[in-house]
Amino acid sequence: MPTLIAAIRRRPGMTHRAFLHYLHHVHGSLAAANPLRIRRYVQNHVFDASFGSEGDLTYLTEFGRDSVTELHFEDMEALTATMSDPYSREVIAPDGPHFNDLPSALALLTRPAVLIAPPTSDAGESHVKVLHFVHKPEGPGRDDVTGRWQAAHEKVLNAESQDKVLRGYIQHRQMPGAERALRHFGAGDEPAYTGVAALYYDSPEEALTHFPSYERSLRELSAETGEFYDPSRSFALYGREVTIF
Image (cartoon, rainbow, N blue to C red; front, side, top):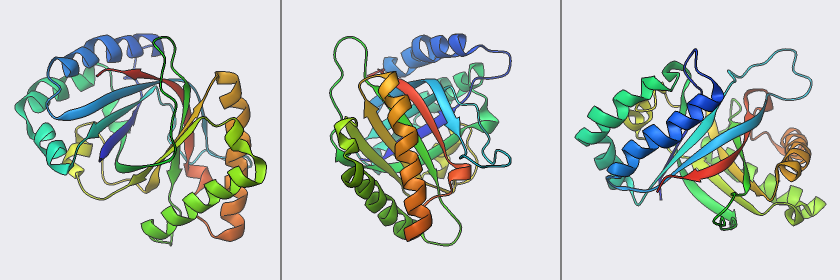
């Protein structure tokens, strides 16, 4: 099931609260009025974030992200048909500049691998979700990096029993193609990201306590056993899911 993931920030002069309101109630309503062949549309509303890694002399990541969009499709045919439909080109895309700082948008085409099934959201408040954008280091190929990433994640959980806090884990692994679809969000060329990890927690306190420790362990394993990501160009966004449809 291919998934388009886009991390965006608000346009200049717009508050975070006004951005989220517009994204949810205006842009989301436009999409819900004609879902085309999108199987699932989720907005992740960001309430906190971290960029780079400890010890960086300067930030190497262009930061400031307000939300992450997820568009899930049955297959690539459905994705292509949706993005080429006149409704996408003439209604959805032109609404983007009303809230999205298009030049800074970061979009990836991914394929999800569910390593720990996430919890189902209740009718009330959803679980906290950390989206970890993992930047690929120079040198190794995408497949090699992906394998090291998964192995490191599993080793961290086994060593520290961190799965007792972690309620769900999905690796959205970058896949090639769909450059035209990525430009729908304002993104440029294919980004050098291995993918995006989605980690689920019961509360903001658990997420803000557990994830930094978990990420630190990943970083140490990456340095010791073969690099799979560049922490200085990676970042994490803490948010809550809002399901549009």
